[in-house]
Length: 329
Image: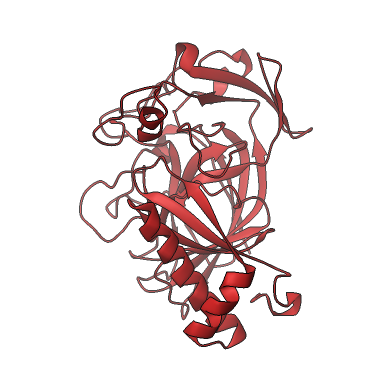
């Protein structure tokens, strides 16, 4: 199988999803792609050593590229709507700097906590915060540690916040929310050795990724995680022609995940649970009522994020929760 590379350079960068974008690379099922990504706020890679607030990427069109800095899109030869794209996360290596922010950014969470007034909608343009809203971090990918000027040190657990494809809809689609075909999932479990399964909605799939996170907690309550550029994200793509999904699911080191997305958190957890009941039915030959009764014993519900407009909940079924020999892979 072939190995390809995509650098974070102007021809490969965009800040939105669209079925009308031309693929910058076409691969076959089984191929590997080694990506380089900017941070979500389009900070220039060449400024990584300064550990100051990075400047906006020089060639960014802020009217067109208003969302997260994404690398791609990539087309998979033979991909058609109704199929499923499996994305294997083989390797992730952060850059040497990152930033976090809050409180003080306009968000519904900050309004509830008394820090700032919530906006009427998602931010118009993603930028790196400045002043006392931002904390810069020095990242050591060899040690897996992040340090800031306050003397705090965190163990990194890097993953990509945005992995997804466009819906079959006209025009430009924002990168801010999670969708049925991926997008801003912000799920901290999608680390190395994970496999993400995404429904394909358009010919070729047109997969893009970005919004690298060095570390994040469930909920992502301040808005951003520890955002950073990624020196290397190695993904392997597999096309499943007969697997039909309505929402993403994932095989991770922690276990199997199913997702629920909705503006109402109560709806989101119900969707995630319904998807897990379906998965357990497939894996263990259970009727829905049987699967739900068992899920109450072995399934964990976790709030993925509450800050992307559309809230996310993921249901987790640990690999050894029932029978490690029947984990579906």
